[in-house]
Amino acid sequence: MTVLILTMKTVYKILRGPGVAFALAMVAILASAYPGVLTAQAGDTSMTGMKKAGAPSRRPDMRDMMRAPLPFGIMIGRAEQWMVGYQYMFEKLDGILDGTNAISEANVLTRFATTPTDMTMHAHMGMIMYAPTASSTLMAMLPYVEMSMGELHRDGTRSTERSKGIGDLELRGLYSLRAAKELRHRILANFGVGLPTGSVNQRDAEGVRTEYPMQSGSGTYSLLPGFTYLGQSMPWSWGAEFSSTVRLGRNQHGYRLGNRYEPGIWVVRQLASSVSLSAGTSGELWQNIHGSDSLLDPTDEPTKDPNLQGGKRLSALLGVTFQPENGFLKGQQFLLQGDVPVMQSLDGPQLKRSYMLHIAWQWGF
Image (cartoon, rainbow, N blue to C red; front, side):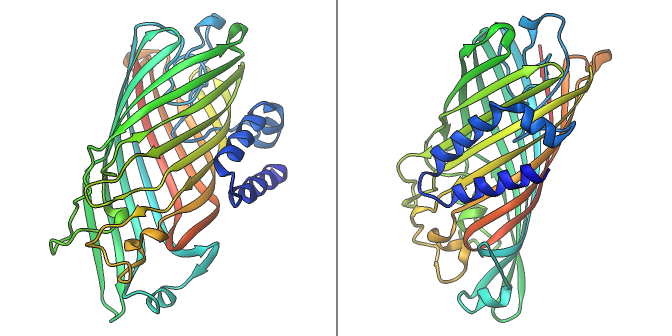
């Protein structure tokens, strides 16, 4: 565990450098290439992102997403297979950071008329996948989000802002670039586009357009490139992933959200044919907003300043996956995962994440 924490700190230092996306991707690949190190440190647990699962197969060539402890949401290996799924995510933000330093609400109010105090987000994600061939998968994902943010004003009064609505639709593809014998190692290419189906016109109770974090959509198209490495040697599975969101153009209000880069590594240990434990780390880097919404006064609140929306985060993840083998739940998977930040550096003042909880279900047929 000590080695794992030191490794996290090393990754965090890399996060501060200019070559963030490339450096994090290389860290993820190198870490997954030596699963023995992670398994020795993580014991019988492992996982990362909104992902992981487990169960043995009778034939090595049948170890696809529904028969081995592979990432939740990946379906590869069987042609003409469908999968539907649902994921719920709860995120709690509480406390304020400026860089890595915690600051008080009173400190923020010396610079702004209003400060955020806390925020909760409930996200519901529906997804459908289809594999036209054994080496490719097509998928569509659409979120619905509900957000609530507490605020403290300079005159001592408090208020709460709320917003809800569908997010941006994502159309993705997955293609197996290389697969070793018996699927011991696989490299997958990820590609896709994000469509601006979410709103950038959310308004508060007084009819005023809400700040950037309270909007359910981006208002722009996005490219979604990435890659995934999968490895397995029953009862273990390990891997690494690098995903990104590259924003294009500007929306109707004259801005675009910053790009996002998200690397991750994980290890999964199958305990029984229907239960797997998992652990991993995930990194996030998101850039500041380009341009600005002319209706948002950046001096009013930090959430309205386009230059105070970026940040970096490294998190630890623990999860458990259930895959019933009999009864009417056969062929389905259930995931419960917790996400706790280890290190955060925010272009603040900005609310910091306290924790996240993921609950997910998927059914392949």
